[in-house]
Image 1 (tube, rainbow over the protein chains, first blue to last red):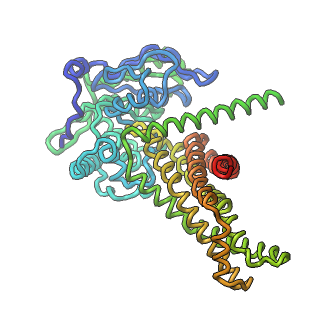
Image 2 (cartoon, each protein chain N blue to C red; image 1 turned 90 degrees about the horizontal axis):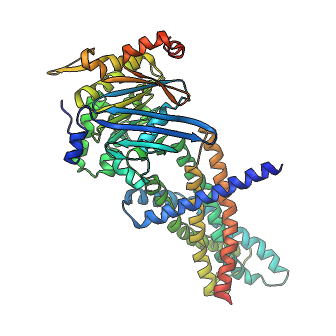
Image 3 (spheres, helix red, strand yellow; image 1 turned 90 degrees about the vertical axis):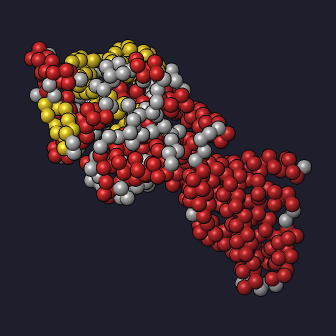
Length: 285
Length: 258
């Protein structure tokens, strides 16, 4: 199954942000709430089609990074570029256009209680993009099929398990075909088997749909699984295997400590760093 | 002590600032796209039709008790036939708008604060924004419109039912003829009274829902925060109903009666 293509972008920008281009850039971002510094001089670049995995203790500022990307928070200083546009100085109205190409999976899903699974997943299509009803419904059924929850389409969120809610949240985030997906602790509180299903969805979206993603988690097992595996589709069959060669470098870890980046690199570099850095060693063990 | 007072004043000023900011966003949202018409209709139903029962009951019993109390008081002056005047003047000018306002504050103000508050603490409002929806346009404006339009309608119904309640007690308990009661009702009302009874609820409805929305979208602190927000919304909007009622009455007296 091939999901439809994302919304069009100017040709020059499209070329600049092609595979490997800088789709999200943080440049010296600083954010504090009153006296408490949340992020201090944070800079990184997410390349198109790649994944960044943010690790760190609770309160290290991981979720704040995602909220800054979506424009739910504004930095005190520094610059943030999303999809080639500087967003840190945009108004709420201007941000709406940027958000059209972003999908975010919130902690606990944040599904709308009063809407069915169909209405939740198709929310953006029905309410904001005004897709024709038939086309929107087809798309909703398509993404629910993609995450394997087609039969739950008319249920209310309260009738779903934690894992199903999280997967519906992923379906909602991907329904409008964004180029960037942000996952905020998508597997926290889930049993290992359900967490694995969610991890596989993240890999599928990255490897089969070319979605660039940022994953915030403190579930090391899930983080390494997403970083070190890739999805390959062979006809109707979907296979997950160990990522090798360049593919293994497409997922990078960023370790946040006290609001600062203390490590950036791929999975094997992170393991090596744990021998040298006592904080990373403690964290990984 | 002084430091605590300064903190309290700062917090109060911040609340007022945020409230005014929200109102400015509402004003802008009312004249620019997009509009969420379906949500507006839903809120008209939830706030207007949903509050009908409580307003009907409150209006009816208020009219009944007013007739009962004033009947026995007027008896001392041999003026029992004037009950209608007292009931109509009190209900149309004051009790109808204020009691409807208080009932709506209790039912709708708390409901709005609880609903928006839970959406806030479960990240549903953040999710709305991430999906490209402005929560002010989607959640606040439909409620403000519904409160502004439906509270006057509810007030008319409450006042009408209150006068009917007064009529039932006057005829059955006070043994005053029906025609005498209705004649006194009409004589007791001036056109300015009717205008006052019609204009005040617009202000009250607007105040109740904007306070409910403001408290709701500023909710923090999980389920405990939602409980606190609900209580704050009811207390603040109930007090605001009485205060706005006084201020608008004062203004209308200056404009219409002098």
